[in-house]
Length: 193
Image 1 (cartoon, rainbow, N blue to C red):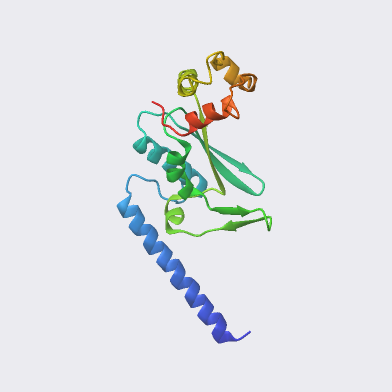
Image 2: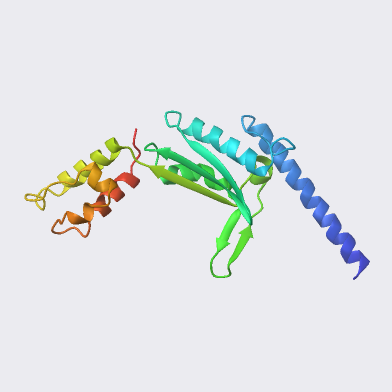
């Protein structure tokens, strides 16, 4: 091995490390409300704490549950909530804490370096898990039912219990491929108070 090559690689590595430290310091200054990665807060713990803080700031009326998991081969963070913002709105905040992506074609996880994750933590996988209250489900059923009045003259609307038990497929509506599909679309595409 050429000693000059090794020295150049070492210098490039040190320069990159210094740049990442500088960027992390700038991020800490511009986001003082977030917890930095340090001896007290490893990357997973810091990411979970920061997710809680950012979600609370973005959606103060919604209670989020942020849970970490460690397992062989990695770790994850799961943010769950009832009604509130859409999954896409929450993912816009929490996805920046995911450390990379899984490539199913090569069966490999590809880590992606970023100054944000260096500063505020990350997890191998980040999940958003939204559930719906009975009131939101009832509102979605009512909206879908009234949206197709010509088709539903002789069809009774499903109940919330029918939805929870997966029985909406029993409700045949001419012109619709699946009543429960439209209920799920209605629920997932709107924010619920």
